[in-house]
Image 1 (cartoon, rainbow, N blue to C red):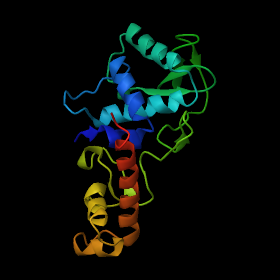
Image 2 (image 1 turned 60 degrees about the vertical axis):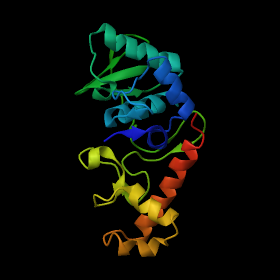
Image 3 (image 1 turned 120 degrees about the horizontal axis):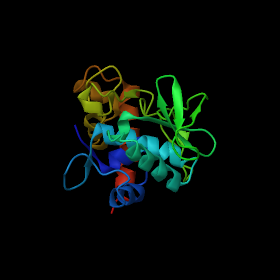
Length: 204
């Protein structure tokens, strides 16, 4: 499963301009070589982490953290690492320890971990939805449709439902096509789809 720029922006809190800049400056280049640009699920997770860090830190510190990982020969995909911040640095969390990557590289610290998958406010002041639940009745699970948002408890893609509503069906009529999709779920799918479309409308 691959993610277009608009859906990636909606799930991560990044703007389309940020995504373009981060591709151009190699902060994160999509795993997938595609035109138009498509992101992998791992890319989306890494980007979500960067946006969370960026909401609290200058971008230069995030770049320094990624450079430090490379210096230590930690060259897995960025999604393989748990990166968090507290104060003015970026920390790599490994098992029960956290290692400073920026201010005092290699120094271990103790603190409570922030949850980058939970809702937060990005640097532009936009409320970024919970990654695992972009709406109350939608879910993101990596082992279900490759992480594509689905109706809660089902394998029904959110956009399949949203397009029915956008085509003129009332949320309550969606059950004719998808019996397991309740009214609230259809309404949530349509609402999230509107956000994705709005973001996509700003894409270059």
